[in-house]
Structures are given as C-alpha cells and as structure tokens.
Length: 174
Image (tube, rainbow, N blue to C red):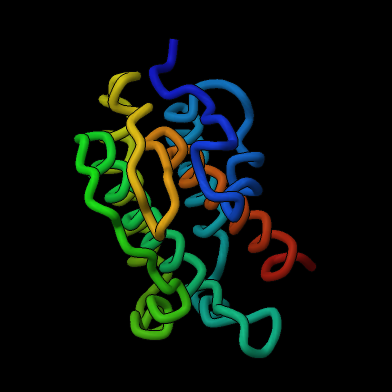
C-alpha cells in the first residue's frame, strides 16, 4: 500500500486543484516513475531545431517548458522535504516567469535539458518513495498557504501532466 495517499482538497491551495485532478488514483510514486519515461520519450522525438519553437508570440519555447518543469519540480520537492522533516518555517513563493526569463534555457540543447529533468525526477522519486505516511501528512506553509508533503507529490505529477498535454496540443500537433 502506498504511503502517499491522495491529499484532500484542503491540503493545498485552490490554484493547484487542476494539477492534483490530473493524477489518477493509485500510487503517485509509481506514476512519477512511469510518466518521466513517457515525457523523455516525447522530448527525444523533438528535433533540436524545434527546441526554440513557440506556439504563439510571448509564449515559452519548448526548451523553456522543459526547463520550467525541472525548476518547478525542484522547488516543489524542496518544499516537500522541508515539510516532511517537520520544518514549519514559512516558505516563499516563486515567480516561474522570472525563473524562465533568467535561465537561458534556449541556449542549451534539448538533450541537456532532458538529462537534467531526468536527474531531478530521480531525486524526487528517492524522496517521495522513502517518505512515511506520517511525514507525507505533515503540513507546512508555502506561498502563504498550508500544504502537505503528500500534496506536493501530487502537484509535481499533475504539473508535468499539464505541461506535457500542452506540449502535445500546442507545440507538437500537426
């Protein structure tokens, strides 16, 4: 039986409800393992020449989406670590647009961005698969809102599903 059960909707800010809803019932750690393989396979099929493609003016490039996935996963799993370990220090929010704007993702190769995403996911899995039910249920504060460590696991999984769907529908369709 998984130690990380689906969080109640009171365990995260309403902003994250769409991400959590994208995660099917079952073992979220198993999903984290399987979905990264699917995401990496999708990204391996994207030619390097298409990495800076944007589906509309002012939107992130494919490379920036991949970098955003990696950065966001780092932030969310760091929050989960702090909360699971009982640290009640309020954690600041982050500006994902500033992260992307200041990261120079478009100067990197898709291969390097994929490799980094894979490494970060491996670290996330290591954290979440060793979390006890008690640790996963602990509550902390991030961006002035209460959140549990387990909710952050679901947010990571749902966030990836959200952006992979956008990649398929808006960047890679046709």
